[in-house]
Amino acid sequence: MTPDDDASDSSTPEADDSTAGDTNTSLSIAEIHADADGNDNENLNDEYVVLENTGQRTLDLSGWTVSDSADHTYTIPRGVELTAGAQVVVHTGRGTDTATDLYWGRSSAVWNNGGDTVIITDGSGTVVIEESYS
Image (spheres, rainbow, N blue to C red):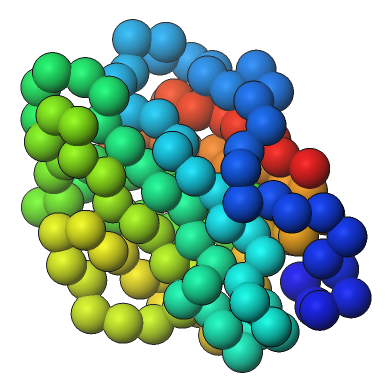
């Protein structure tokens, strides 16, 4: 999570048993951008995960969570919906949420540049995606 940690480019996820729990979910991780330009802790909005609705129906993501292997957890706000084919970017830093960009509000980096696991749970706490990258 520092400039010295950028031994690998983690902008493209490597699947590692990427779906757990409800395998019928149409949510997928389109991109994991763990290594922000420069110092990750000074460029938090360039550290992000892109979620995509690959299904045909709108997904209500209210109350779903995005977390890492160290249990840093972001809860998706009420009213966030993804239409078929739509994406939403979950940035680590601060900003104003929109239909396409959500902001975790953290003051330090979450995603480890050398590898981590992105865990998505639905509103009932069931793991629907667990994807590791290195």
